[in-house]
Length: 91
Image (tube, rainbow, N blue to C red; front, side):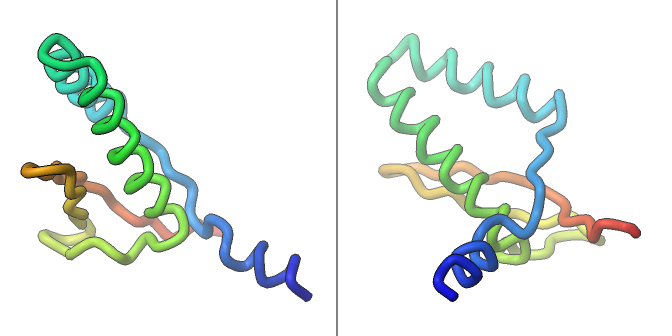
């Protein structure tokens, strides 16, 4: 029974990052890394964790326009905003 519950709590959505979003992440990470490598690593982990969380809770973000949603990723004194769409699988 526990394994069934665990499976049900696992990701319900597949996360697919656009090439454009990966370029923006890489650029931001590289800029931050030049200032402080350790901070850049921790920030990247916070972003990754928040994005992974969308796999289990895809509707957690606020709807901002049409099917575009945003989730705020808090990190230290600043935050990042991830824009995403949740598409219901067809078929």
